[in-house]
Length: 334
Image 1 (cartoon, helix red, strand yellow):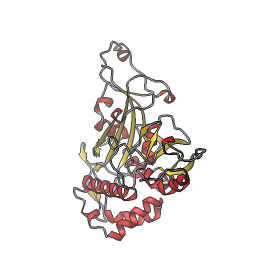
Image 2 (cartoon, rainbow, N blue to C red):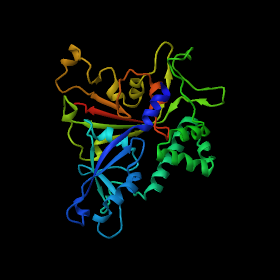
Image 3 (cartoon, rainbow, N blue to C red):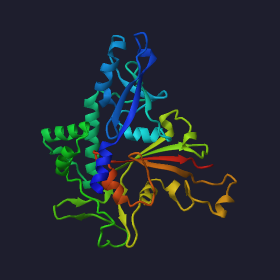
Image 4 (cartoon, rainbow, N blue to C red):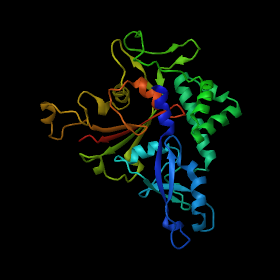
């Protein structure tokens, strides 16, 4: 089952309908949009070799500085495509309508991108960060041969899970014990950090990138979520989760998110779908200080918070060993 879940993650894709921005159209009539299937674990700049030839006859002469937007909102190229979709489309839009630009790069919003080289650099750098979080150093990434590093990157670009599975153990990133199959529990409150028979560390620190989109007004349906205006509406946390175990208690996704967002997961915080108590109802006088988590998505899945965190980590991580979590919250009332 675990291998099947990872396979689904690697095969996951989002249908895109790419429109050429009107300022880049130098032909009449305007070209129809390009239809592309974008891997969830991939990055938008890696689609350019597919998209640019389609529009080449409609482009004006000059230097290209390619970027994408969604409803006028510039998309950060170093965030995996699936994460962007989960974060910006509360109600999934299929196909996802994006606009490609070949001019006017918004350097005040987006960091420069030199195509595949920039994306590869970002991937390897994230790999080093993840290994430092897990092992306390990144020597296994640094000591990886150039050919192995190239092959690892190629496996990600091509969505080749078999090749990635052959190469990734060389990084010795460690494992997380499945809590369903655990025969014994460590002492209460301890972080699990053991060494297995192969000498790999059973990690106690999980690399997590948390994207929190905050909405000020309440809404009942995801289709009513307002369009995003600025990246300032999204909080970004690059912070490890300490994998804690207590005897007789499963460490859940709720526990992990609570460690990162205590203001939304405390005793008084509410999760969408949970009933309020009478005491909570009586606090509708503006004194509430907690918000409400409306949605948690990982790899396109709307997650139940009681799922064991070990399953999430072992099955839904991205290839750079980060777990990307998108959270939609109703902002606290002040």
